[in-house]
Image (cartoon, rainbow, N blue to C red; front, side):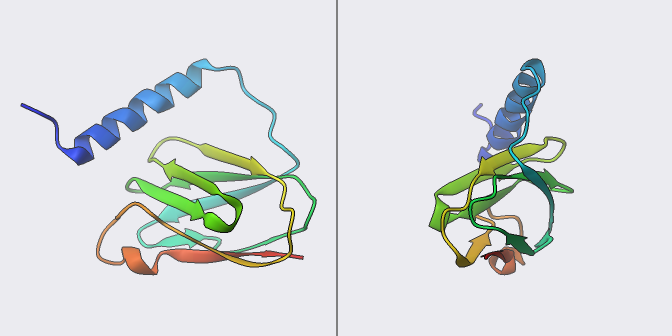
Length: 119
């Protein structure tokens, strides 16, 4: 019997989380912005950054597996319950850039989005 796609996702997240716990802690780049994800919102949903300043987005999910997609910068990651996920980058352009959840998380999924403002 094959596991369901949801079960495979949860199992792969558990394996990835366990593996990252074995790795030595890495220093984060510059400023750290904590982002909490829960059905059907990111908190904060409006993130203000400075062009050229290194930043680490630090994600946690409060309930179900979710995704983060900031396509204008080619950034994408899974956000799994019980696992802290970090994305380090340095914004190289100014403007307003939308991001969204790209893993279906329920009936309000289509409204789960936010914006990064870079000055």
